[in-house]
Amino acid sequence: MGSLTYVGITNKIALLVSGTGGDLLMMMLLVGGIVSVLTAFLDNVLAVATIMPVVEALAGTIPLAPVWWTMLIGGTYCGNATLIGSTANIVAAGMVEKKGLGSFSMLGWMKIGIPVAILTFFVAFFLLYIQVLLFPV
Image: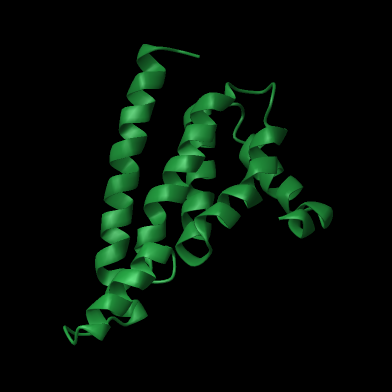
């Protein structure tokens, strides 16, 4: 994360996200989408830590609480999209193979994991957005 900040990658992502014209919904979706993709292939802690400077760079332009929550939703649920996106996925796949109940390929996992990750992300996102609409920050 420090390297990405040092070379300016996080600033470029912040510029992309802030270029939405201050639209909270769009910023929430962009941050959530970026974290979701990262966490599918990286550890969720690393993915969230990578995007934290991006969210911090948005301070003063929009209410940050919904963006922080969206980042956490993406980091939590979208790790299930791939076999390597979550430690729990790796452990579960290892237990299935160890018991001789079958095996998982990355593509086989993704056929199930991506729809589940997208569905759970958008259910949680929808509930968060309803809360933002009902109780503005």
